[in-house]
Image (cartoon, rainbow, N blue to C red; front, side, top):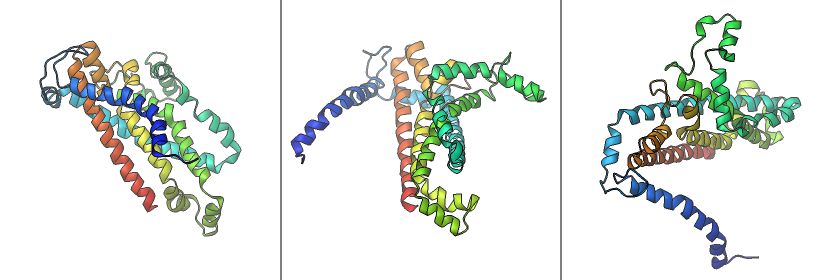
Length: 290
């Protein structure tokens, strides 16, 4: 059956209506609210870009932006590197692939609250498994209050996030691996391409589509992180784990500066869109080149 323009419009109408109602309308309302001095979700006087000028000079926002960027870079690089390594190992070991592939997604299916409390226990300075393990192997000097030390708290949260989504990332890479025709791998083997040479010249270019997906998802997810730092450290110690999402929550729902908190949310929205578009554009070009 061929679709005419009217039928196509009718088919698109329900999804378009829901998108406009739950995405576009709230976004426009948020931008308008950020241009006022409202202390609630309604009311307030129009003040133009005053909130945006304030957040540019706000040391709390600056620190949170730095924490968010650092967290995102670490998560994206480490998560994708480890995920690619796990996918390569599973692709090379068919005997364990089916069993391991099932368990890979289990951490990603856990609630973020459960993961937060689990890793909070692991990092506990008193009776925590991590410090107990370091003590058992004689590395007493490495024992510390992982979430109470400003130098380790943010990376500790990043490690828990990586653990949670590592299997998800590896599964996407593995799916791309399994989509590569066997004839390509056989031809590479006949040409003497093995190990690192095969990975560099055959695997890496052909894994471009999954790399685009994984880097884009991990970038967007990391920029918006809120649950883990909120539950594990409540932004501490000394604000070293505050992210932009945490600042939005703090300003809006603790200090009731809704307009200012919304301005920070709009800033995060544009950063996320810009990062997503940039990453996708660059990696799509790599796909074409590959």
